[in-house]
Image 1 (cartoon, rainbow, N blue to C red):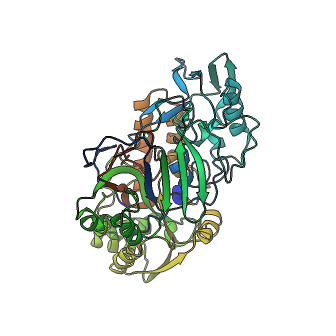
Image 2: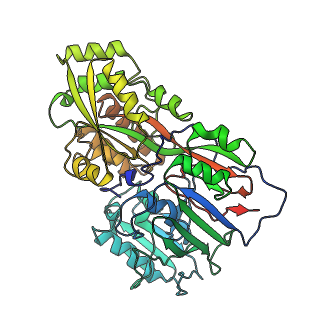
Image 3: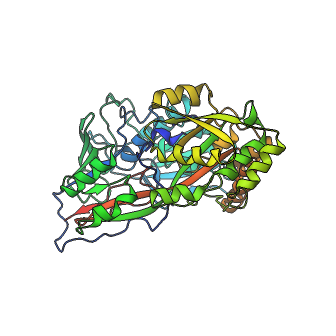
Length: 500
């Protein structure tokens, strides 16, 4: 997505209301009627943010990953909502003892949606083209791959050096397998190998999938899935109560009592990798002083965000609970107004005025809490709510901002804190070295320990603040089972969804 890892801001960028994390399990059965699943059913799912186009190769934004990966497009490997790496188009794989050779066994009998057979050459071409095409999203994730070859159904990736993130990267865009020489218009159409086929896209309204009857694996359990794009939460609630949608993702947990009142829906709270991130521009001025940044962190009441959204959990570092290297860092910056004031006095900062640049689709609750919290320690915060293209230009590209808020949804995106060119403007050689060591580690536990060490430094440096850990808040109709409830904002695998 954006940069080497993607800012998943464009993703569920806008659940309108603040969406936080407090959590139950993954795919949770919900109350249902006594009928058997209907294989001819059409399931209607409310989503928030509609993609601008469908080009999974070049277009940023998790709004694409959310609906296209798993359902339409697949890679050699995939991942569960709980973040476990599992077989995909490859039935199995092996990794050499020196972690330099990855060998995958490609399944036979796989066909694309246009009826053409998936060949080993398609796999080689897809991965090599991704690696060699900077304009394709996540191409840099294959930077350590020296060669990609096929021998019969075996696909071999040879690396220049160990890369503990490679297998994970192959579960995302970097690993998507396309048809070599395909002439499909990727902006408006799709040709993948997944359990669903893109049927229609009514721009500004909905996207419809139909079951892929030629799918290599277990067939989808419903004949049709309709993604109904309804940005406003109240409108989504009304649609649910009127029986117009079966599932409401990105739901406002404050409306739980209303949607559950007649027993037609159950609200599920699941973990996610969403991180409500407050970025500090550290290039110059008061925010270049670590004491000022730390003062701001002490001034923020993180529990207030959780309480305001009736769901969620606090987060005090850059790695959420679902990701390797997570550690509870609440001790680094607890809510402490006096400590904040003392740090500002030590930095000789008085009457500080700062501007918060925030995309205008976020709930006003976020800036309201920040304005109040910072005012209590003598900092005046001006709020600059802008459309997303303006945010991209001013904040992401030109780094012209004081403070900025965006919901980063992508999993395992710590690398942004190890990239001094990223819009976070954070540059710490020790963090960069620890991150490089984690990539080179051949042991998963060692890699996670190195990430945890780096993440603590990032937090202690007050490189940013993490206002909350996001949740998947999903209202599921009583006729639906098999609806994912973990990390729904990033990936939404619907192969096991059933409707009665």
